[in-house]
Length: 444
Image 1: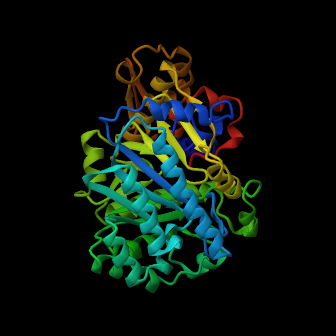
Image 2: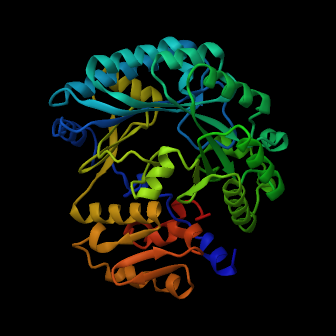
């Protein structure tokens, strides 16, 4: 990678899984807005649903998610009950029956609810929603806890896509991040899921972790590819020990520097493309026949809080502590503190604690940023026909001069050299980032 790209890669910008980002959410937008947006839903349109389970048996050192160590089973049971109650409360605010086209469990480790707990939540959803035929039902799993019984139970619940948290296969790296996970556990999880009839598998990897090298990451990529997952997401580790106490357990002296992180990202992309995967956006890879790859090549790729997706639905309803819901006119996020979440639901109140509203201008900025992140190009006459973007286009001039972007009329394009730093290009259209960029992670 050129010195020019390396210079931009050090800049701190959002990952743009949404616009505005969660950093802009405020308590001024909360449950009253949530209730109004739920009431105004168009029931002829199917929605997506996300359920968050903020518990793990052990906390990994690197984790930046809203999760905690599960110590008592009764606490998990209480959370499961709150999740069911929130679903019922939310549906009471809807104008009528709503169809679900996508369902995604995230965490934490959602399977910590157990097969019975997952089935209980699904039963509540089925009482209050209508599931479309062939809906996508995905869940994130820790491969160390995937038993044959769990795999069979997931299949019975209609799960048809699983994301396995692999992170890295090198034992030294695993020890440094507090996640001992022998490759035989990953292989066993894959075999059990496929034997149970769940064939759509995603793997999640991370670069920028302690003790990782270019050589070790190439080996991880090679090992992962041998298991033939349909999709791979490889995120850059965001080290924020000020915000995440568990990350203070990582020895910062063993973390790769910015220069090495950039080389790692390049090596990963090179390796997976060599293994026959298509590069999707900035950090995803997919088999050519996978739906995500087809969406990317046909211009139907989108980006949400789970990363790149072929899900273009306008409404996403989130359940659980810290979950985020997306509506036509804004976002709301549930209270993050788990005990507070459980108490709020027990009191019969919706749990949204902060969010943001979208006006016409913000919607056009959002379409522009998503187009850049997904297609590496934005036709402003399509994404933002009412916006001139004089200041924004001027901000892009240095990137144009450095060969990282092109501006042809009203079309902004990331060049091949600029692909790695497309987040920087997108940030030119985000006025919120200009005041305090230190809130965000490095571009690579």
